Length: 638
Image (cartoon, rainbow, N blue to C red):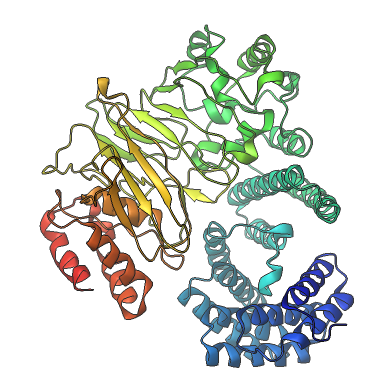
């Protein structure tokens, strides 16, 4: 099929093979993939070639050619070790485990796959290996161990960004998330744990909703016919999954009616048909839609009183189902609280949208929006100047929550819908970047970090899941306190002295040349501090420089600057490394930052820096300047 063709043509043939594989045409897919591989045979150690060989190996398994798949995976494993492509080692063990005809060998290979996937932070491979171990536990009747692995799999999913069809075709992995969730729920039902089964079903529902949004977004951005055909097939597949899920929920026996399954089903159905338009008849169709948002407040009467200014509450709602998608998989305690009767409010909301002609202006609403809800914790959304209300699939940053007592002392994060009093929040429309502008009188929190399984559950420091997509976790990238000084550390979570305002942080690396984060002086009249722009990247720069935005001179960095860099970037999929220093600039400089990140990015220094960073990460709850001195000294030595 190919003879002496260019690399570009070879890759095109390989990609065509993958698309055929996605369509279920395995035999023809193998033909194309093998043809592409023959043209690459001279470069066994080529990264792309190894990826392609893994993909064709998975095709062999799908076609039932287990012996050939086993031998191919074994050969790839040898090449991976010889050429030091360690990231493919877990996939090799997985494929060998699936293809092996010996049950004992299969279990041992699955165990090896799990070990190496965990070692190299390969989340999709770790999830797949986790599934293989679940199969082994189920075979032996060790259901409790299987449930532990299922729960661990849920955590791993937070690190995986689903690709088309819930499959990682280009990496030789076929991860079936529907299979994972269905088997997990069935095992919970079998072991009479119906409450947890319902919670897992809710999470599965949200995952499918988000994937549907991704598919719709892809169609709007790409008019290529092949992509459209692929979208249609995947949407049909999701429709089948939706039907199976609804059937599963209906069959789940519950002792108390704490979740309105009918409302969930209706909202789930809406997500397929009305992603970007608001339906005014929603109030009569699904009156429980908004209870997830408002049930944390005191009473319907209080909320109704606060809605006297009809212009004010438009900022809370983007589309009919987006609000539900946003909040439906919050902490189970929230979902299982007593339902809030919102029929009056829902009707009022529909009238509000009609009044403001929201259907015509939903993406460009520019009213001055202020709203205060009375409850245990007040919520105030204020928008300065102009706010774009964006379609849900473009909304990358989701709301967060924190708690303070009457003395304004920080108590920790709460996975509910309560937000800091007097919070000003605007979400900007950006299809490819995650940005947030937030203004708070005393503290500023900005969140945009992939979730890691290493995150602990201590409410006083470690944040909880605060997104409906399961992709980001609420963790402060920046902590600003207008009352803090360079020589004063507050005894609270991630308390650091604030970075000099009016400074521009420039990331100059091969991954993101000239990427900038601008910290500006804005609204200082009330002691407010404003973050101008935050861009969260997923790669670790090899070189970082910090310059003053006005003078362009190198700028010394305080402890917060180091924390900012460490939180924005993570090393090989691990938890973002908090790198807190003592207050002041005595230890901080651009040179230290460069050395720190080089230590993470190169050789033996990476392991050392990682080890020390993890050691001190969880001491940030009660920081003490003396605790950081050994780390600073050691880091500068690199």
